Length: 211
Ligand code: TMP
Ligand code: MG
Image 1: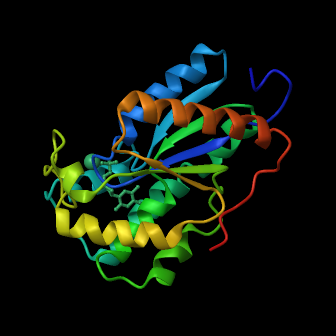
Image 2 (image 1 turned 60 degrees about the vertical axis):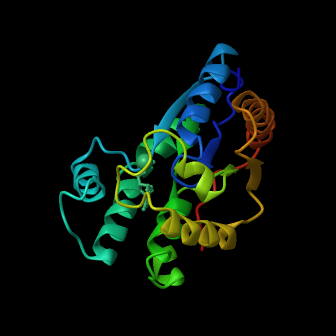
């Protein structure tokens, strides 16, 4: 167990295009960690449960129209409104497995043509992840997966641009996993990355994103 010795939890983020397998892998990783007695929770962004999240959800469902910059700032606000709770959980020893984070915020908005530095600015000061796993899947392959096409950004041409922006965001916390491999293989790779991250970050201070 990561928490009983007093170490902090790890902030582990999964990123990738729509239908890259993030949500399934987050669930598998979470139940693996909990099964090992590790204090862990699954989170996701957008968090559609808040009033900001409901505005985002309506926008994604094409039920409302918003200026590109306005929706960008709502996605960011949706992370900011969770920052304090996130910090408390991590310092209390809970590892958070998070389905999307600031990298989605920047990659998707920049793919619309917004200036990337402008997109990064409101993310500064949010908690920096200890590990970002990017599930790498070709946009065409993702589009063949079930449930694709229901929401605003689920279009192959757009997702290609998102992928290019994700690429430019890769930093030292990133690990790229081939998301086209069988689910069980991806799952094993994730378990190993997560376990070593959880061990390592017990002696590391929480940091803030500084883009
Ligand atoms: P979801 O399918 O993971 O719930 O995400 C909904 C969509 O929102 C997905 O196409 C990615 C996009 N998105 C952004 O544009 N900005 C963000 O900050 C986040 C978290 C997601
Ligand atoms: Mg989706």
